Amino acid sequence: RPPPPQPGAMHRVARLSAHVVGGARADERPAPAPTSSAPASPIVAALKGKIAALAKERSALKAELLKQGDTKVQDVTVEMCINGARSIKAMVTETSDLDASKGIAYRGRSLFECNKVLPKAPGGECALPEAAFWLLLTGEVPSDEEVRQLTQELHSRSAVPQNVLATLASLPAETHPMTQLSVCMLALQKDSKFTAGYQQGMKKNEYWEAALEDALDLVAKIPVVAAHIYRRTFKDGKVPAYDSKLDWAGNYAQMLGVNDSQAFKEVTRLYLMLHADHEGGNVSAHTSHLVGSALSDPYYAWAAGLCGLAGALHGFGHPG
Image (cartoon, rainbow, N blue to C red; front, side, top):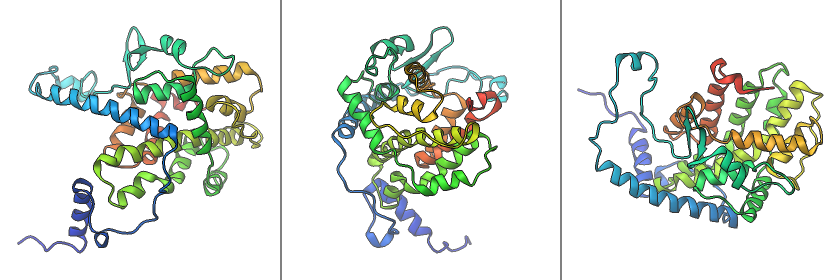
């Protein structure tokens, strides 16, 4: 006969089912630290509304495509399997597409077009990365005002807990920058809103909102962490002051302390805009998606993607 269920087995089943049927009883799940009940800022509410509208549209398209679910996409050979799924068409990624001859396109727009139409810093010629972020999430080119509010939202989320900086300081300065960054991403994980919500019985259709909250927090905090890593690894360890009057990339360039020129801020904006997305099949993006598919929160998924990005065949993460 099969062994009797282990204590807690039904508890785990109840917790899993709660996310589908709308929440288990309070006595059937643990009581983690509560998530913030503060209402979303106007710009985050607007962003979520646009994402929800796009998701509804894409869900309808998905339903139509599934009616043709038996249609063959391609033939798969033994060589494809042995060589690591090379050239196998097995994923759908809508945010960006990498064409061998045309390069990367964000939501169907070439990078040249993105740099032309996306909002820029006052007096600048390079598109802002936070504008590209909005385009990737919503499929829409944001207005100058939307980008301004999004930038301020990121500034408001940028504080890095002292324990994370203490963890970073405990690492040898000669530790590879990508290792330092991955460690810090995991150190930030304790504040994951997705994990807190999941443990409280968050419904499945709410997952994306909690994941977006974590993603916004990560995007806000990474420049601060990265600047600390750069300064302790390559310079004197002193980080220039955070300047919330600047845009997201301009402030990052300021904190790096390479120089105080507008030209360096512009090239930083351009570099980060051009690298905002890289379709879904490369090692780092695919790893992040794969880890996230296990309902690991964005902190875990992002840290895993960074570890892939640090590989020799993936550029060592361009640490310099």
